[in-house]
Image 1 (cartoon, rainbow, N blue to C red):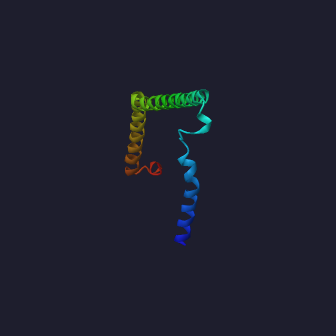
Image 2 (image 1 turned 60 degrees about the vertical axis):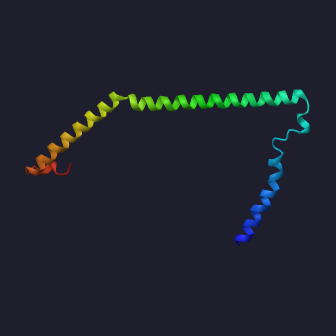
Image 3 (image 1 turned 180 degrees about the vertical axis):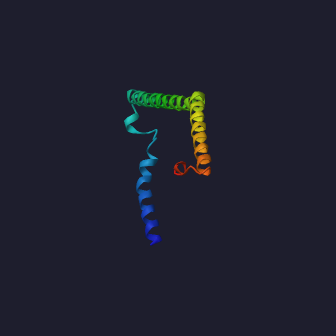
Length: 107
């Protein structure tokens, strides 16, 4: 079974190898003219600029989210105050339950 899988992978690799080997062929007949090479350079330049714009936008978005999370001190203070209020209410309910006020024991 393993031999068949290996043979299949080797056959696929052998079939794809020539296409990969010719990907950057400097003697490609379609790239002999200077206009074809210039068109290819322009396409590559455009693709690189698009990728650069994408990366810059992504990095800016990540930094905005990071700064919002880090710089949101008011948000943390509000959340902490809300937590403290809830804990104080819970502690009062526990104390009332321990004092025999059974209606507070379910909270």
